[in-house]
Image (cartoon, rainbow, N blue to C red; front, side):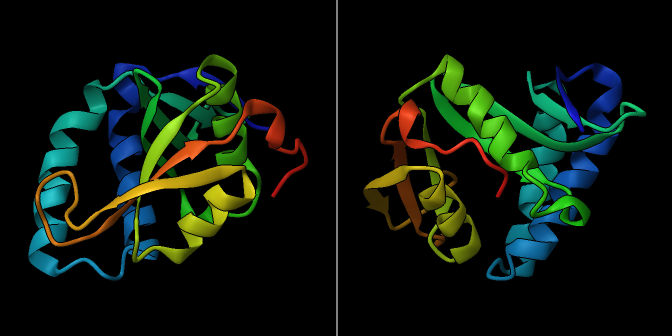
Length: 154
C-alpha cells in the first residue's frame, strides 16, 4: 500500500509529470494556449510547494496534494493509478488536519465533481472564471464534516 510523506526538492520533476498526465487525462476542456500557460505556471510553482505525496514501495510519487490554510489548492493522481484510493487517502489526511477543508473544482470536470461529492463535499458557490481569470468556471466546495466521509476505498 502506498505511504504518505512530505515532498522533497528531488520530487519536483515527478510531481510535474503527474500534473501533466492528470491534466491531459481529465482537463479536455482547456484550450491549447491556456494548457501551455498553466504548464509554465505550475512548473515554476509546484516543485517548491509543500506537498503531501502518496508514494509506492520504491518511494516513487503516484499522487500529490497541496493544502494552504485549510484550502486544497491541488490534488492530482497519476492516471495509471486512478481509482485505487490514493486521492481519497490524501483527502482523508487533509481532513484530519482541516475538518472544514475547502477546494475549487473546474465545473467542466464532472469526474472530479463526482469524486468530491462522494467524499462529503458540498457546493458553497460558483465563479465564472478560474483563479487566473480564464473562462473556466469553478465550483467552490467545502467538506460537510470529517465524520461524513466513509473510510473504504473508492
